[in-house]
Length: 444
Image (tube, rainbow, N blue to C red; front, side, top):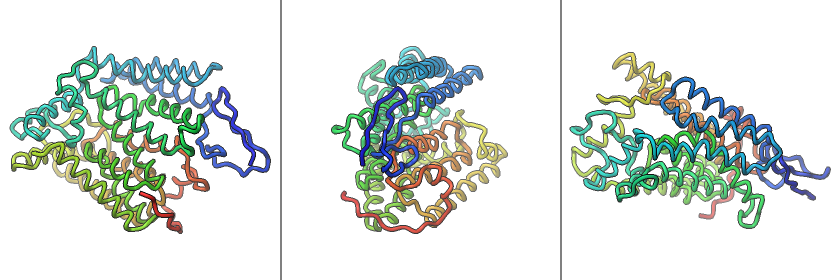
């Protein structure tokens, strides 16, 4: 088949001859995801600018980020309408939405709640072997630590004596997120990156687009801990999509030892491995991910379960606080369905928790009765599952919807296997039971 790729101001344009087979929508002849046209990108960044502007107008607490980001996104949208390359517009987006507000908030603003919690928990961990304060010390919501032990890695530079930018956990979460996304895009690239200039370009551009979007740039700037988990989840899906289930289990264990939101990935990927490959492959993945999660957590916090008081502290920090059952509750709650129900009183809170349990059971039945066939199906199932659970959680916030939105963004920016359905086709067929054949066994 005779093909050529021509660089243009609108991105890579594929030129094909008449005898070529038609291409997958959004995908070029060689397996690449086609780069969006400049007008489409300009519309995206204009929408991002509107979002940031509305954040400023509504007086949101994160108006500092929004002020920087609104300008960066607006400049990016204008630059994309001019006949220039993509490097300068995306650099403006990253500078305005991530680098400038991140450095400003680190150097000129008080530390955010997440930064304070990680710093205090890391100091307590180094002294006592556990990052969780005992019940007697939980005197306000800022003393609770809802993160798993490995999250305290981001607080080690500050505890080691570094100050300023290098001592702030946000720098390290940003670097970790960026590195994981680069690795994920490299893995899903259809060619060896070092041998393909177009692949290298796409990895750089897609990574820049991902970290410049509000889904990643905003939480990184204000210190939220979700971006590293999202990036590690994308890296896990990339490895699983290439049949590298053991390596996927290792990466997923890192995320699972940082935050419980990553735990949902284990059973869904395990079902996919069982259906697509073989039961022993699924077992190997599950043992790797679960076993290493426990090992990483134990190594990071060896005294977390050493005494009854320590066990009580773990329960109050990791279970009671996220469910809104503690005396002091997080102020980061959004008016979602679970929150409304829980505010009706003790019976309402119990009803919200019961609805979450029912949703988990229904989700389990769904993935067993209509199992995911590949890593892209896994991403879609997780997006649906996260959206439902976050809606019903009695103590959740709008920011958690970053997970399902980021998973959909991952699908939009990554190539699918030849002949596999597009994302919208998959969404409309999530409930359809389809025949399948087992794929070749993975190599790792």
